[in-house]
Image (cartoon, rainbow, N blue to C red; front, side, top):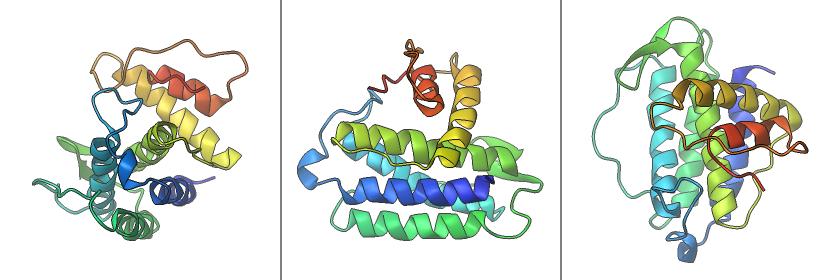
Amino acid sequence: MSLTEAISKAADAAKAVVAGITPDQLELPTPCTDWDVRALGNHLTGFLPYSANAARKGPALEGEAPDFTAEGWSDTFSGLAADLVAAWSEDGVMEGETAFGPGMLPAEYAAGITLMELTVHGWDLAKATGQELVLDPATAELAAQVTAQAAAGGKDTGLFGPPVEAAEHFDEFQKSLAASGRTPT
């Protein structure tokens, strides 16, 4: 499975989770201990145009994002996710470098981060709101690879919590969640 296909499938899975979040759940805690559902929802929603812009090799976006979790969040998320998928589906999108974060990154690496954001934070939102992030096996496997690599490289940066022990029965995606400091039960 290509990163482009996985991003599309992960975006669909995240859209389903966001559609299932009710306003009374916005203050619930998430596995990202610094963020409640509202803050994490805003982070993930704000990431979508940022990543789409990176796919199109635009200059880094700056500025404050609005509160996306207000009225119509699911529709907003769905529209931004569709644009994200379109951007990462363009010809030549994985070639070269793009503005992403504080500097330039290989475009394929930025696509991997996009897959990780959709799946890990999609899982976080699902877990916090009593839902399940439904990923097909190929998408889950690719997301697991990307997340495990990022967690191993980012454990000293504060981007991830300390790893938790992964049970033997965990699948690869659950193991990658554990590596990123989450308890996938």
